[in-house]
Length: 140
Image 1 (tube, rainbow, N blue to C red):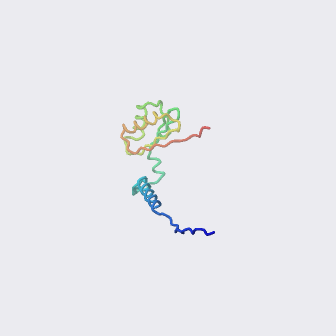
Image 2: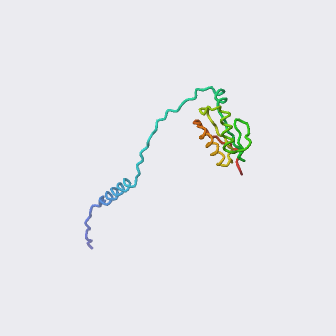
Image 3: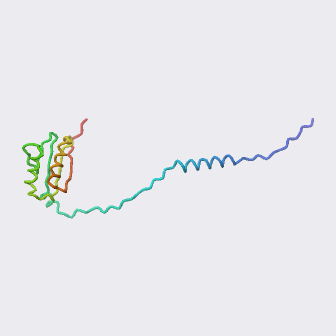
């Protein structure tokens, strides 16, 4: 019995669909990529040159408790009204509104009390105003 010989064909991989897919992926990634432009700011920060002991004496500290009671340089005020705070600040500063003013408040102090202290400082013309907080503990 004689079998017919098969003609042997060369096996090759068609690369055209592969190239099409690669180009489509390239286009997809180019379109979907977001380019961010990073900006860098060069900031020259000032250095402290003053004597810390002298600075502590030449500043005014307004302390506010969590109940809203106000003290200026450790002296408690009669009430926590705006006019009382303004008169105490005028007395302590002796009209020098260039002195640094620090508003120190408890972490649970009502926001209104802090804003009132900032408002009093603004009305008297204080320009160096710092705000600090004291955290008395975390709640569990």
